[in-house]
Image 1: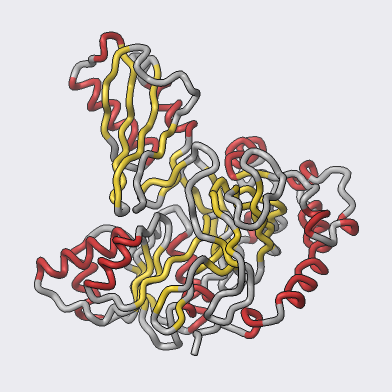
Image 2: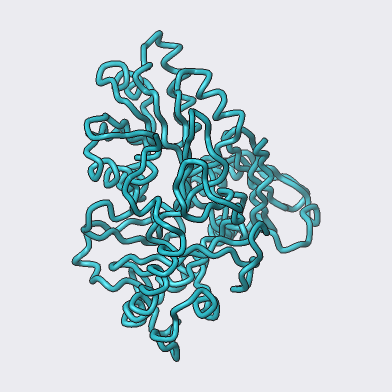
Length: 417
C-alpha cells in the first residue's frame, strides 16, 4: 500500500484542477496587494484569472530577477504579503538572494515527500541539510514535525560525528544530498561502524545519477527517493515507489500550479517537450505568480503507478539559464563577474563545472596576458572564489582570445549518466 500523506494526493484530477483554478483569483489578488507584485501585475484584474490559459497571459518573474528586485526593495523585493518582522526566519543564499519563512506548520510542504519514503510518527531522521543561512534544513524540520518524527540536526560536514550519531542514535532515515550520504557510508566502512538502521533516504539539492542511487542501495539504504524543490518555493515535486521500485517521474505538490514554458519566454510548451519549470504557489506569506525557477523539465504523460493522481514531471533536467547549482549551492553569473572585478589581471573568465556521480568540480578558466600569473595571484583568485561563492574551486589560465566568444559565463559540463 502506498504511503499517502492525505486524501488530496489521490483525488480525481478534474476535482483538483477545479479547486486550483477556483483559488487562482484570490491568490492573484493577494499577491497584487504586495508592492512588488503590484508593479508586476499592474493592469491585471484578478477576477479574470480563472484558468490556465488566463494564467499563461501573465508575465513570468524569474529567479534570476530576484537579486535586482530585492536590491531595490530589501529584503524580499516587495513580493511578500507578511511583514518581514512577522516571519519566523529570514534566509540568505549566495548571490545574495533572500528567502522568507512564515510561521505555519510545514511551511515548505516537506511532509509529502517524507511520507513517500515511508516515514511515520516516531521514525528518527538524521537531517544533513545545511542549517547555515539557507533554508533546506528547516524545510526538512517542518516536514518531520508535521509527521511526528524526531530529528537529529546533524547539518553538513563532521563526517565522523555523522557516523557516530547514526551508530548510537539509530536513525531510520537520512535527509540531505546524495553525495554526502555516500561519503558517510564510506566513512562508516572505514570506521567499521554499523549504520544499518538508515533504511530510507530522501535526497535533493543536487543530481542523483542512476549509478549513485544503485550504489546507495547496494550499500544498505533500501529506499532512496529524491525530491525537487527550491529555496523560494520549498517542495515542488517528489519521487514515489510501488512494489519496491521507483516510479518514473516526480509527482507535483498539491499546493502548486506548474507550467513548462519555452526558456526565455512565458509560452507554455506541449506535454513531453522540455522547457523551464514555472511555478505558481498558494503561499499566504510569499505568493508566487508564474515564478520561473530556471530549471528544465517536462511533463510526463499518465498517472503514477503509486496511485497519486497529480501531474508528474520528469524531474530536474538541467538549467534554463546560466545560473548553476554546485554541491547544493547556486552559483550566479554575477558572482563570476565579481571575481573578475576584484582581479583586474583577469581579462575574461568562464566558470566550468565538471564531474560525475554528484562529485562536482568547479574551475575558473581565466584569460590573462600570456596565459600566466604568479602563484600568489592564482591563490588569491581561489580565495576570492571561495569568499564569493562559498565553494572551493580551481583556476585554469589561458592566453587572451582562448575562450569562446559566445557570451557564456558559466558552463555546466557535468555528466549525469
